[in-house]
Image 1 (cartoon, rainbow, N blue to C red):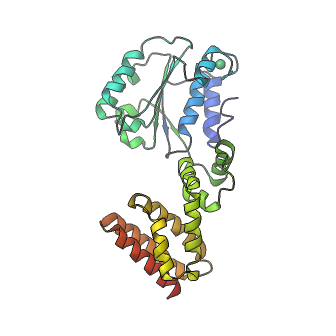
Image 2 (cartoon, protein in one colour):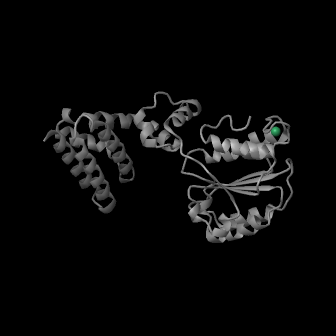
Image 3 (cartoon, rainbow, N blue to C red):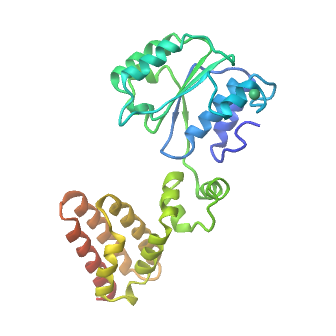
Length: 298
Ligand SMILES: [Zn+2]
């Protein structure tokens, strides 16, 4: 059964099952949705199914399926950015090969990941293929934002929107696929539907436990403790914003019992702005630790 391993986006599953059943496969799709919610996995499953030459698609036993599973299917291609762009040379190569007939399957599939990173020239180069595709080819453009494409490219693709995962779906994925147990509500909340974010948080759970313990119990610590722990928590500027957002959720949960935490949430926002604007990261963090402590204990 296709998509049995995929959690969430039920409407898209149904849509693509129908597309395969009715054999109404388009030449170009654009998969649009936020980062790390399973668009690529979905595209892979779809590719495997339409390349399958067995009865039930995907059958998992035909030559195409077996080669697909071992990443050796000669009719399947994925294109990824090199550095921060997908350049015209990469797309030219695709365009050149696209007219060569499939070898094992009846179709050929190209998945272009982070396709919004195609340069304008690269998009223009792809356009010719999108305008006159060989009937056997399916190109899937994966992107977080469809506004970054030339209108001519966009209009040639069937757009498929992907929804973010809800907390239950995210939890299920973390438990079933990544064997993560005991994921906290706070982790799910801050991951906000992103598998990648949740895994990073999970990875740093020890650090986040420290943050939890400190900022849930500010009244139990003195200012010296706060400033000492600062070193362990705020290691670099890059991560600081995410950590502050996490702290904000802790404060949000505390507002019910103590309205002083509303002010603390304002201090968090203020600190985020300070960090973004100023070069003096250490000073911004010191100021944060002191004002938050004073707000609760002062
Ligand atoms: Zn098969």
